[in-house]
View 1 (cartoon, helix red, strand yellow):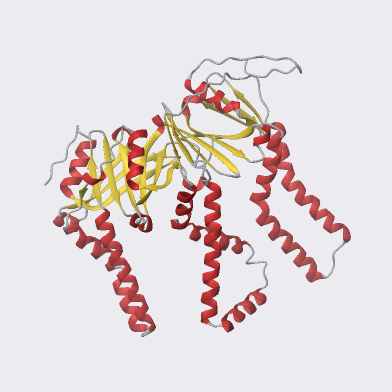
View 2 (cartoon, rainbow, N blue to C red; view 1 turned 60 degrees about the vertical axis):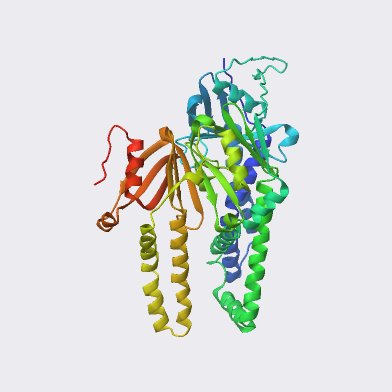
Length: 495
């Protein structure tokens, strides 16, 4: 009744590109090492170059070819079945009710063939999609949605080429609300983001792969030449490198979030973005575990926020499993207005949040200055006068303590809990429904007991792991009220 389907032939090209991208660094390092060793011996047979090239091609092509010719998927009545592999056969069955999110990605070279990539994500995906349909007809997305929703399917059988094709009846639903970001908003997002540091880490990690194969004497000679240029020239070079990385970060952000669109449907949210790779993510409203409102210091001064949703599935991004960016950047007032319209069951009254008591400021200052002031004083004495530069550290720690104290706050509604804190740099506001909270705890030390303050921790399901929201040095009465709100059958009385 349900026939097996194959991937579109362009899936083979996509798999080859993926294999090249994943293995380019080890392949280049291996080839560099081989040719360097051959050069040191002074002997290189003519057939060796062709042999090495053939081996590299086979290593890239073989996995892609085997996966393409053995990959089969079946859309059954109750779930999707996938199997592939030649020697080690892998069979996967995913019930439709277990699916958390469905992503549709469409590379620019997929568009002429009317195909797309579908990522099916469940709560147990271990940080990645449970099923990856690399290249299938776009109509499969609607068919999969209809099967998940339990709608009747119209199966049309055709025997023109002695093959049966299952075609799902298309169901078109207009979004209730659509939010689009303008290009200037994306540019502002790229400029105010910390993507330059991420780009720098990627470059350093890439260079680290080649550290062992680059001659040490050459590296030392280059370092000496840079040192001879003087401090001013080195500073100028560092600034130029940072500007180049900043430009790369801006271009990457624009490509990733090109024509960003957020659409609200009756039972789901759909996020659409990307230039070279068009990404469609469907988020079931019933699967949302919580909301995170992010305010970095620079964006906070500009009145801008970013909004993420926490889901029990994966985001498709292995680095941030369970987090899906709902609004990359937007004015704070407008963002809250949109959230209230799209998620009416949540409470977003941040102005009514209860703040930490003034006595908590002393605790924040003690903690942050305690581990910075003494080392800074020691460094200033031992390395005077240059050591005085280390006194900047406790000043920054004090500023961080004050900012963390000001950001701390909580608010409980009938079914919603709001927690606000500044764990590192950005101010985070967690908005959580009571029924989605996995666990809640309050704790305090013997010193906090005297100050009548407590720590509050809340856990949510996020991807294959959990997300933790917490506030420090909260008023003890506030913490107990929240604990009793979450577990009304067992209350804690304030001592």
